[in-house]
Length: 173
Image (cartoon, rainbow, N blue to C red; front, top):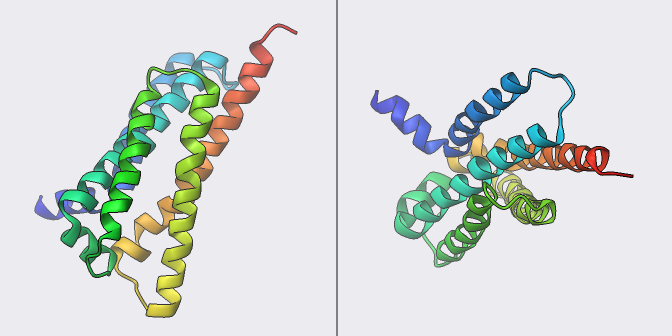
């Protein structure tokens, strides 16, 4: 049980993605249509952002700000003041991500997805650099976090495109 809990907490990006899929699956099953509607795409995007940007970055904030030594060790780094900056950047992403559960404006949600997308892709580039230059294959650098840094933004962008297309098809011409 301790190993399971450690896996869940150490791989929080994957854990929150899986947890966020639960309400998304309910939306899809309730709609029971192959073609997404504006309403279903809006709810799916809201849940994705809430879990994968809001809660994910809130966890990241707590880890980097309050448990910086542990977070640095997990990544394969030494503790540095930069962790505090990453933590507070994560708090900003968390706040807007959590707001997206009730703020239904597509422009706001687009910004909420785009900002952490570039942060995460930059982090993934940093992970690659660390793997090549410093042989850093620590779990927090080359593990699941590396892959979610790449793929969660892609999923978010795809959901944004679906939401945008649904909004175009549902608006009066």
